[in-house]
Length: 113
Image (cartoon, rainbow, N blue to C red; front, side):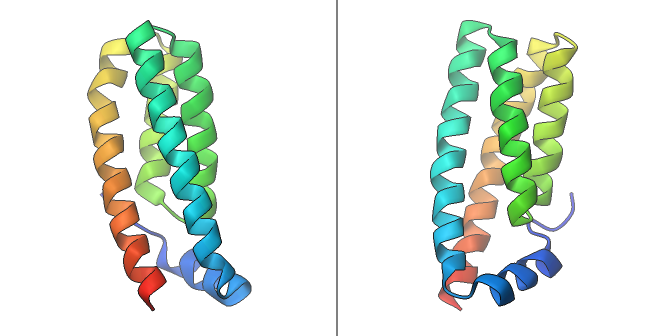
C-alpha cells in the first residue's frame, strides 16, 4: 500500500489552515469513528445499502484529508457492497479499521509539529 497520508496534500492543508488543521483532524476523527460504527452495524444487519452510504461518505472525507489508503479501501467496500459481496466487505472492514489506526497515528505526529 501507498504511504498512509498524501504528504503533498497535507503540506498544502498545513499552509492553508495553520492551527485550524488540528480542528480538521479532530472533525475527521469523530466523523470516521461514527462512519466505522455505522458500517459495522450495517454489516451486522446485512444492510449493504447503509454500508454503501457510510463508506462513500468516508471515502470523500478521507480524500479531503489525504488518507489515500482509507480512500482506496472505502472504494473497494462500496464496489463490493454494490456487487452484493457481503463476505468481501466483511473481509475488508478489519483492514479499513487498521488503516484508520495508522492514519490517526500519523495525524498525531502531524499535530505535534
